[in-house]
Amino acid sequence: MLPPKIIGPGGTIGFLFDIDKVGSGYYGFACWEIFWGAVDPESLHDAQLFHGDVVIHAEGRERLVFCIAIQTIHADGPKKARAAIAASAAFQAVAAEPMWVEDQLLHIPEACKLDYFGVIADDDGTAEQALEQVRRERLNGVLGSAPEPPSEEPATSAESFPSSLPDGPSVPAASSPPPTSALAEEMEEGRKQIAGTMREHLDNMKAESANEPGIALMTKQWNGLLADEVLSFVASEAFKMMRETGDDGVLRTQARAFTSVWVAITVFRVDDEENATGPFPGGYFRGLNGLVAESGFMRVDRDLAHWIYTVTKRRRFRTHLAFIPANSLAEQPVILCLPGDVLTAEDRRELGARRQRSVRGRS
Image 1: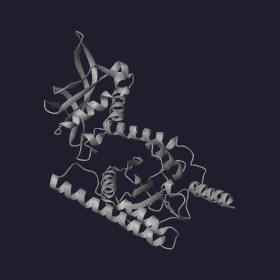
Image 2: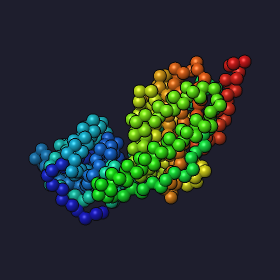
Image 3: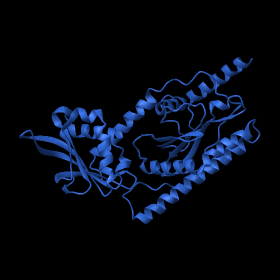
Image 4: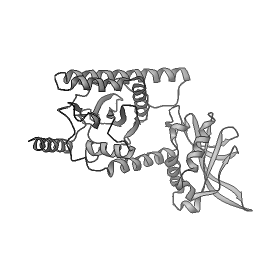
């Protein structure tokens, strides 16, 4: 446990948990799970978090409660956390009375710091472990119970398995934030590196598919991935997730819908640069279907693009891409691109079965 700290007025809030209601032998960890289940760490960048037992006076008596407190230089950080916690049914079920206190002195130990990206640093163990547990549970909910892949054959005249690019540039390891100017330069350099590999990967796809029917249409669709807003989203989010990636086995994923394309990004650590299949339980198709189902995305009038980045222990990355055209293009010759290095043997068997069903359907 780190030495006790005193946090004072000015951008502070402490959330109070009723220990009896939590009902866990290790109630501190359980409270952190509830906290991270509601609060996005990225909303608390440049913050200090504290935790511990505190005595409150309520209804004429003293009560011992567990407190998780936030102090940040950004005024909107505590406000966002309060709004998220207030909407959490899990917190409401175990909250003390009052549920939180604002701008009061609290004599409790420091739990961790969050850097510019909302990445945990200087952790005493509990906060980060609870966050990773929450992320694992969310991932299991997405991938572990994913629906079966659809039985119908995707509209395609050719399957392309673009090779992964050679090792990408090194990714800076997560650390406490350097001075603002240095951090900004690091972010900009990282984004440029990732954007460059995106362009190179798409150029390789175009070259490999140059003689395929539908290449003119697909070139137009693929170029949509280089639109400024799409490129900026992928480069920025991938860079942040790469900095967070460790040996925890967690897949980090972000997704966003744009006008003509739905884009997802997944980043995970690999031990073997040649084997990128491990993190998808049941195969890549099942994992992708689960991700799509969780997001509520309907593949009707938008293309689907899934950028996948595998990061090695040497913090070098490789780029993979799945691109599935919108259903609205079904009557035209299109090219389905799949991340060959990520597909498992089960995925390839499923793909073969789909081909056979498609041939029988056209015969």
